[in-house]
Image 1: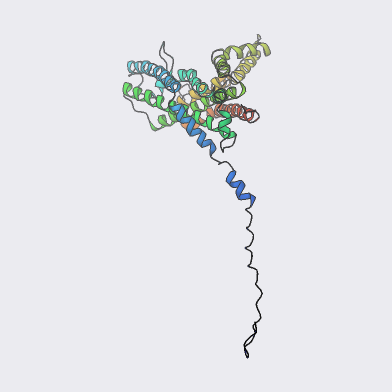
Image 2: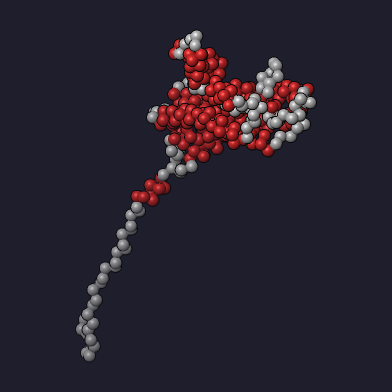
Length: 353
């Protein structure tokens, strides 16, 4: 087709290809890993679920009723003694705490009953913590959730401690109220602080048995086996600990005819007795709730005689804490070791069904 005269012929422009969109930037691997990473508070989820189960379980209410009945009987009997000797007990310091430390035949002291029965709380909440999940075949399903593996054992231990603390606080508050009504003498601020410290010490003591029962639930496949082992250790240390310590001390350091041999035998026996958490707990309980306790064992008695200390010496709260500090550290160490064994054993086990 010819162009008109005088017109310019415009060259046809070449079609430019449309610019390609820039390639999408690949997502970095770090955010992806961050999204897939389990939450750091997974143990809280496990603890909340287990705590709700514990607070609604029959075992908690049964043990709470048993402790309450024992506590009411001990407090009622001791309040009768205090009311009968009201004239002689007028100038007695920490009379309110005497409700917990004193005993009236045939009922022992409240702290003695707690020291004997409280380990059942730890054993009851720990003997089937892991093998119960294995028996129900829910452990692989639980570990399939976006939580770390150690969150399971951490959450179960924390839930058990919360349940134990709830029971102990409720029982102690209830029996303390009954004792207050019975004797009509309000506690001082120091008495309340000593009682709170004793409850915290009791939680640590029961925490040892909870940690040991959790270790048994990890080490044994059957809940019955773990419960039997934990109960056997509890009965052995509570009822026969002193007898075993005496037998071993007489075997290693026989009491001779001289005073030096007898003193060495007594010191070895006391050292062996302090390997038991029951002995550590009872000694710490005496010093916290009774301001007149200045020490334990033969060395404390010899030191009192050499310094001419009077039996009526009364310690302040900080001084009582210093007296029981070794026992408290030993109880915490035993609890940490027991839970560490349960922790490491659980992480090294095969959990697939």
